[in-house]
Image: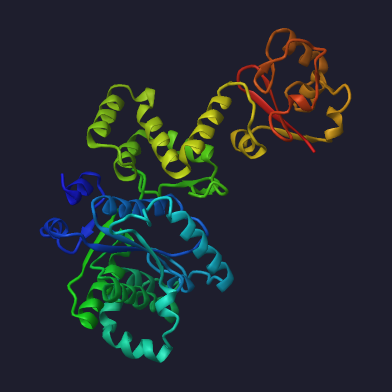
Length: 426
């Protein structure tokens, strides 16, 4: 398959400006394309991974991608898909977010390729030097108000009785459209890609490019990453699933994909991984024959965790998963253990309790609330059902010391097969 056929098979094509001719246009020669990323945080999240990997697919097919970090547009905030006005960010926070995205994108795009290397640019570099009057004269005069009012991102907000749209957000479309004009003039960019909620902004840029540059430009959107029930993919009770390990640990990231519903795993394998068609179809067949094995989910989790967090992150995630199911615990840090056992009881004790002879295991079981009394704790030990760091306790007289810590400050206690508790010594 050529690139566009592969993208269509993977479900990555939602809208194009030329359904019939785009494939041949892409095959004719290497093209320059871009996608914009507004710096609303210092990390991308799972929803941003889809368009970022779309740029990666184009680069691997021989085209040159440009990732535009919206240092200018981020000052305003995209109204697309929003029911209320965004809170504006301070210049300092915006600068920190832009720096974070720059560092993160280098893990997905090849900025050092000998031919057609990926480019990373900030639209503040060409927008900020323009005065307000220059922008109105050179850009604004090319935007018919009727066209702007007809865009869904504007119309849906103006039709609501409980909210409206400020001139600030109304002008977002002009700024993003001018990005396409500038990139076409300076870098020969001819194609803009983005999520389906960006269609109005993309077509505005195409129209502005025709008016200002006399250029014939193309646009393509991919679907938003959603579950089969229509809700957004990458949302948990704790919030968004981030690509930054400081926000979402490799273990949490891995577990999110391991637990994807059967109805959602095939689209995720197609849209988010670079696995070949034959393997994905084989996984589909295996799932139809034996869904309980969850082979598709494990393959998805392994592939995406390696992509986002590398081999070391995947190894940590696998080890943490094994720990949750009873493997002995060692060489993990406090943060990983906190992720694994986020929902179990936790008690804090002074570190001095581990000094000298240490803390008797029966006292530890009672303090952790895994046993109501020392007599109950003793029975658990004598019956072989008490564990420290998933190692069976052999004697009621066992004393716990700093050597029994699973990490810098945490000790993991278990009673029976599934009842866990943490003791934190500080």
